[in-house]
Image: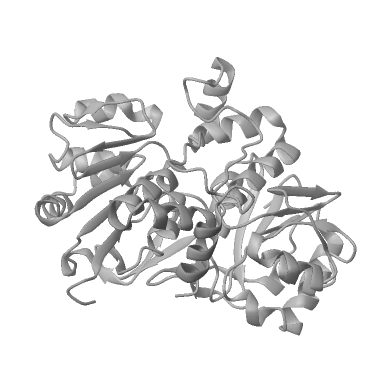
Length: 212
Length: 212
């Protein structure tokens, strides 16, 4: 780290959705001058919210001072919205960030910390009401940028958010190059990726599969 | 695990590109009946090929018997193409898989193992020649499916590959539901994600950024 570096901190916790964190990580690690820290309550492995996988944090978040904060979502957020120590740290960190960002239900943590009061924001489509209950104004868009707060929709949207953020930090040319570097030319085999596009049967099936 | 389960094994190693593994992981973990194992040479943390992050393997790959094998890429593949123990295991595993898959430079490991001899396959755009040198026939497509071998292009393409594979394993309806579950409705802020679309300046810049 030096005076010119941008300290980008990714929050981890037990029950994190790994793609929420790893999508923007894979983008932002290539921002020139970025210094990346993976942080949790304490250093060590954090279980993913799927089977068999853990991601390792190298630092305690209280030992970091993020210029850019990335808060992922996942099942673990259900209890963390009541973790007063984390919420207090989020407020303190946010006061000094250049950008405070979330992916998926990470927005619920920002909301619970009071950071989204009256702020347009997005989250996973199934949690828009929960986001509103925490004081935010849900906007059904994939990436919502309001001042220094950038929120992304569900899980995979963190890649799009990461590229938006890379453009703010390092310019459009760098963001375009990173997009090519990670070969992000998406070609999903179906067109069911948003709740506005998917049919009712698919919506019902996802509720069954994701709560199984 | 039971007789009806599908054993899906993700290979990890030091220098893995985390999105290569986590993209398809986030998709395939929701396939009904899937049993997921994260495996490396030995259990324990594997450093990502970016700063500050490690992913934890829970098993030794030699203790697994994959029905579906997912081989990610990353800088670590540069040495692993000469790891005769791994290559031998890949050959043995492949003989018994329903699907053998790769993301990004993971294809180079399949190639070095002889699995892609004369087979159409894809990899990260910057490694097509290296793939050809290993006996495969490079195809500049995002997901290439030939029999039970499915290869994906660079890094983020593993999400598209995962959805294709989910459809094969569990049907299109389930794959559509998973796509909605991870809200995969990509909206990249730029259109520079493939080497066929990006301009020469962007191609040059990515070579600088990714080797920095």
